[in-house]
Image (cartoon, rainbow, N blue to C red; front, side, top):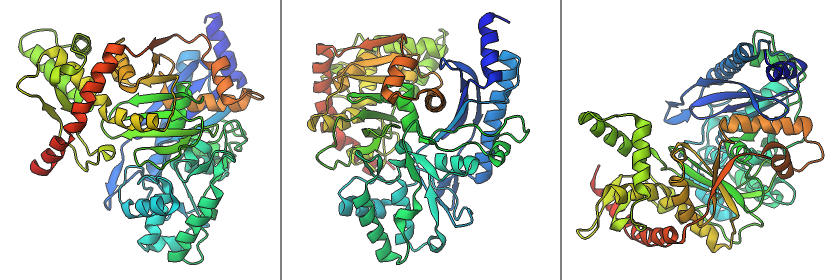
Length: 533
């Protein structure tokens, strides 16, 4: 064993580590880091939501069996990599997909199956809350789910004692504490930027709205207590340790950081928690998180207002459609390459297609593309129809086609970002992550043009949110006296290798011209949805 390997093993044995576990929509990931924030071991477990009684859910059994499997895989990885057993942990943290609705009675019994962020049955509630409270309440927020249950007169409402998110539920069962990190809390109910707690006047008005339909129900008392990063959120109990690791290898008594949402851990994983910074995540969907210097002056339905794990306000631009259509076209070109006997390696195809995009005309040569596989709330579409549109005078080349497909992945996002620009929000840098940024210098450069700000990519978020929540656990363990932003800048990301692309003036002008066509062509997309069923 090398000296470095021996040092890692010693850190594990002595408990100078932090463990983060994140429950994502398709994977539960566990990540163990050392005092230098480097990854020591990982584990994962795949899972899928179920559509039960017309609602998307995950069962309690799936939550616990999945957590146990991910942690067991991590413990096996520790043994395999370092030759020691993982019995002690210095700090622990849990994060999960945000929003949704987990409702319990006074005995702690789950009253209805977990309702995830994906459900859209809350349309009436969200609309009434937004109109009455003067704050944008998305369909997926916990308050929207609660109020919809009240409006619908669901029987379980009579027994309500506590509601929380998935991360809050896991944390509660493992520590006995009904608390939640401020970032995750901001997806339950609006947060006051000064107090880092639920907005008290708005919460009182919300309580009155609930009581008007359900007299005697104290809505404000249903929510978990809000904590900011670095605050004491309890310790792993003996019962919690047994639930997390049924073998009994993991010892209880571990300090646990406030549970957080996946948006917050993504911000930590990309060092995007300071004002005028943010991150963009591009996958099946694409969304941007922008840390604000001050509250926005107007309610915008295109924007969710949430917070960082430290409690700073964040504007979130969430688009349902991201890079999936790009992947579909890459698959078509891969099939073509195979059909003519050429090399059909997917990475080579992506590299060639993305490389061609840089040779395209700055405005896409008159081509328009829509990546709408699903509906897109920002542009008012309930359903999607992927399209490529051109005039007889447009210039259809591979280069223009691929540049337009990349532009299409950013089109709706840039419309939402333009709302922020209209509010006077300034950006110094945005960190981008996702598979489409693996081909160096292509999507990164065009995204910089689309948002009008420098875009950074790097290897800092290789383990994503699981690493992010592990860092928050380490911040609890060893970050005393430092603000979260300073801690990340001076302790976690110092010396990180990053690549920054500044907006190219020609790209910016070309993209602006393309975006005007894109907006004008939305009527075509709407017609396609109406005509093609």
